[in-house]
Image (tube, rainbow, N blue to C red; front, side):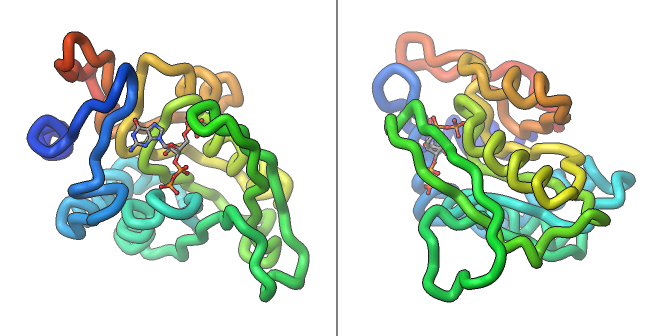
Length: 193
Ligand code: G4P
């Protein structure tokens, strides 16, 4: 997605060896117009797939996911990282290990929001090692729903997340694919949409 790549080059900051800071438009302050365009591109990519739900994980996945859901005209569900006192009914959970933070967290979705008839598009802001998306796939599969694809705003293609998800038989659609950060320079490879 050309517009997104241009925005990353304009407003993204490389931190250390492998972290891209995009808090100006995605992970802290959110550019809703860009998110709306991103949502439309995901919706167009999966227009023929019969998607019935969009699923993401809090927090930064929510903005691109809500606009994708709007464009597809389906509900959006975000997995919770902390159990809420109102989550009293059946919940589906998965353990997610973050290589970046070196912690394991339990993510959950109330089982009433997913059924055997659902065809799900997962949306997330970053794909690094793929553990968050893998956890979501596990939860959605527990519900008996079908994961149709994973839509990613920014994929760090030098990490193994894409391989992890493709090995699970899931299609990945990334709007920007970062090949590497070389000498403080960000290089893209061809994106999926
Ligand atoms: P994984 O899910 O692909 O395995 O990713 P990993 O555990 O390595 O990442 C942990 C968190 O860090 C995730 O957000 C992920 O989106 C984010 N992250 C990974 N690489 C980058 C990066 O280069 N830049 C930025 N800005 N974030 C990155 P999270 O902890 O779930 O945070 P949030 O969504 O609640 O903000």
